[in-house]
Image (cartoon, rainbow, N blue to C red):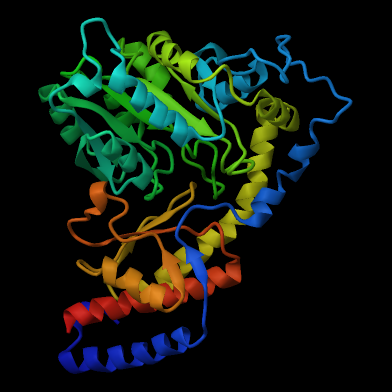
Length: 424
């Protein structure tokens, strides 16, 4: 039934029926978690052989002669540079391989530019009187946390079906030199699952920022994380920026956190020679080098990019039924009610749901009381401020299919109840 067309008596009857279902769920004593995009144990098990990919009798010498047990190899071993270059569609010389966390590399990048001038005639961002960052919304809460920590004013930019609203982006960056960058998850965006169109990528590459030191933080976290047989394609921002003479604009990030082990993967960034020079100068004071044995483990486990792609097919086999479960439940339970909208991604780790206006916090609260934990309402906006109180991020990856099905039943009941409370 279409909830927006119900009479007062019909709303009352429907609400009473839903409350009975809800109380039954509460009585089950459930503990189901869809809060974060954690790989399931079955996904982690796929990489278990990685732990045995280096044996005590093996050589620990990388292809360029570096002894991975010792100092040296500051920016990563050549084998790993090659793997990440393939993932990010660039050349190995543009790649810096770090520790286990791309988020850490993003934090370090912002931290570096806070204290170091990118160009001789620009100030470190800390010394700029006003500093702002563009934040496509809904977006990744941890991105917003980084720029919030460093005191940036965060300006929301609406996400459209093909990426950020580029009319807004172009106008803002061309007029305001205090805007120093923008966060982007260009493929299977967190949380919408949107992949930037060719036009959006080209418009990013052609930006003419008022701030000479404006940077695009291009977090390609889900570059090869497909969950359907019709994957999205993302244009190379590096290639497009070379065409426009803007090769210094983007800094790319990715990791194996959702490929191998989330707590023990390998992260990398790719950047132009100028950006790399600034970043390396800072990092030489921070580390002599990252964990090269872990890099070598990964390189020998995958062998080449074909090995990475074959591995991701196994992930897809685990994740695809979970995404189908979420989308089927939303369609079956909420489509006719006309109180919610959601994305239908071809990859990534999330489904973004916009519940009835003004009810997201209530939905999350009701779910929690029934034993289903979700990411907090508003988390996908800077400072947790969702002006319409609508967006909720669903993370299907961790629960089993049966648990996920039950959790989605509860979510849909809570979404209906919250909407009826308002409509009543």
